[in-house]
Image (tube, rainbow, N blue to C red; front, side, top):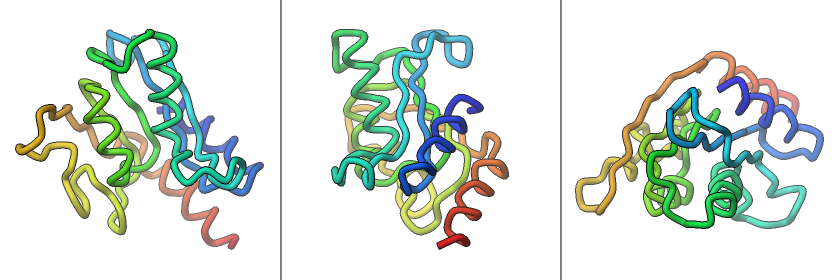
Length: 145
């Protein structure tokens, strides 16, 4: 999560919401970082440039496969519906997130896309890792707006 927090902090320089993500290869927390991302919607003008999507794209490119089986996505904010869909479709085994998102979270807060039994893949969800640090970064950002 500390790696993801560094990514999130780097998004501040472009005016993007400070969310960061890292995809770890097999082995969970001890796994090799395969992809990283930070929100870049403002920087790129791309509405899909969320931290999770960018990290998943980089990891898939590095592995040479869209299937990220045995991988873990670590992200500072609970994924939205778009990102939750992307991580389900990429077949990551688990998602670890920091701060919950009661307004748009799709891993248990508002929706639970990630664990929807109607879908063909349901990653493990580990919520609340360094939640206060992740939440404070976001709160400070929005207070400054």
